[in-house]
Length: 473
Ligand code: NAP
Image (cartoon, rainbow, N blue to C red; front, side):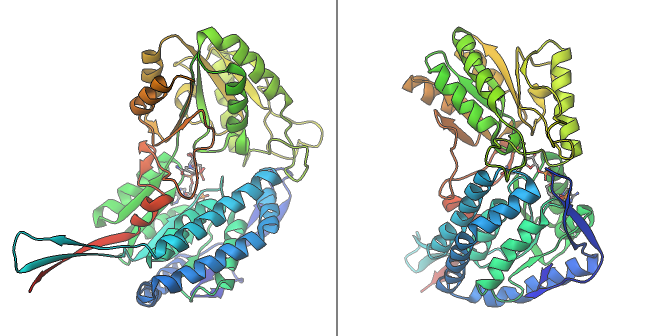
């Protein structure tokens, strides 16, 4: 753990394992409540100095952290592959994406502008000033174990906030590597603190109730996000919630079915389907269903599961046994209720995969609303295809979910693309595009997918208060 600029190494700990092999990777400290309290106190103590530093000074440290992260890209990616399971190439991409947030917010730090507003009174002037929210508590998930940290710490530190971060229990080693970078970049003691724990509940409770914490930023499941938002409500703490998704992927009959199937095969199986923006319901207009399924089946059947360090691997393991069980339950439920299984549909236990959490890349069609997979986030390598006939029907079907994070539209008809874009209730929409994300673009969801946005100009606003000065001259 890293508290007040000091690395702590002694004390009770818990194990971290490689999900591809079950091998132990290391142990990390299991923080006591007193240690979490000490981290919050350190962040509180560092706040006046850090929020009072110039934006240029804060940016300098973020620039250095960006440089260090890119210098260490390969070793960070190797660590991520071992700890989280994604193939090395995907891990390299994630480290780059993570570093982008440090660079973007180093630049945004210098653009925290206020404004003056004309008054109706001749003797009055209005002055609008932005200031750091204060001490931030951050909780992050395991599926993107480096970029989810910098997407929060980048803007928080740029804005002048100080922070205490709790990473996921499965991926604390990646978090430690990020904090080594911040330390090496010269971040003053107490400005960012890391606590690792095996049981997140006491930390979550403390983050939500401690009076020094003015803002909670959370990325994870909707169930936990709801719980934390409720806990934080009595003190009216600011919250940002980046929660679950159930992305529709709509393929209209004027799209090229082969191109669209290629897009699905790439985005659906990214990170073994363990992404909040992963397509969960693939709606295909009936006229092109056959060529679409033919191409998708061939592509899915070719995906090779394995250890992410093997260059031939296209999909890594799931994070743990519970994830395998959940995916299999959804697949078996769908088959029992009449879905067609094209390929996959089982746990992989041969060829050295028996020690890891591997599930075969799976394609289901004839999926219907009575199936679990139609409603629940899958978080696994399963593509679920649903036929549709009319544009109005598919928009209603796509919006028929409590989630509102990402959606995808494939069409060559510009009017239809814009119409559908406007009618879908999702925060991020890819139009003939499977990667609508960037540090420069606002990321976040509507409805049960969350509150607030990360990245982009909006990302730093989440860590700023607006202060009005009224001057009589
Ligand atoms: P999760 O179970 O909600 O856990 C997320 C984080 O919250 C982890 O650090 C976890 O700690 C912690 N946590 C769990 N229960 C807690 C409690 N009672 N109090 C305080 N902290 C608690 O989610 P996950 O399985 O790690 O991540 C997958 C979910 O994240 C999916 O739903 C996915 O869609 C969502 N996600 C959303 C985005 C987005 O940007 N919208 C991005 C990535 C992921 P432990 O690890 O120790 O349990």
